[in-house]
Image (cartoon, helix red, strand yellow):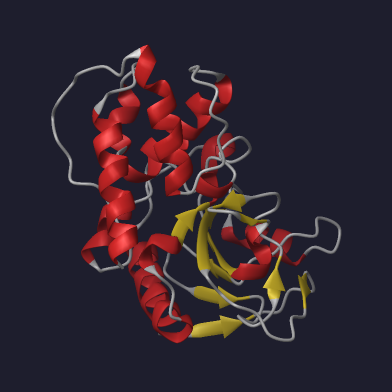
Length: 238
Ligand SMILES: [Zn+2]
């Protein structure tokens, strides 16, 4: 795997840090060239550790040991503002603003090689390889529903639930159970017992990552409870 270094000024030095998460993003910019410029811009103050072009070219902008500015206000499983504990990887994609499109095979293959390397190097648990939308569901939707988590799962780099075809709808009395499971799994969510805006956005983030086939439906299915219980049990075992 070839990695080209192209340094960004947007990072904090860390004397010693515990890298627990890898956060996957898409750039949401028209071209990789513009994305690279943005990730190095002193004005915008954003960066990531890596940027992967559609061709599969990998650029490293910040050393793994340093803190890149990619996650922003974020939360997962009692950890707040995940920049200090994570590595951020940006994938070039035009995103929802300029025309979200499926990810190229070459780009995903490069990502898989990089993830294998980082997972081994920093001893990352695969359930801590997350999307930006998982850790900031009210603000962010990247890497989005077209990101092929199933390909990562085949390579031992992601956990996914065992799918089933049941279409039974979630009852109102079960909303709190769903909120509790989402919270236990890692999402920041309040237990309102209501299908409020926050709950809908967290469900959207969950479905985009773990069961994108459910996004076509307007209703919330009861099987999400089973999916979450299964995912939580895998986390406990590993
Ligand atoms: Zn992002």
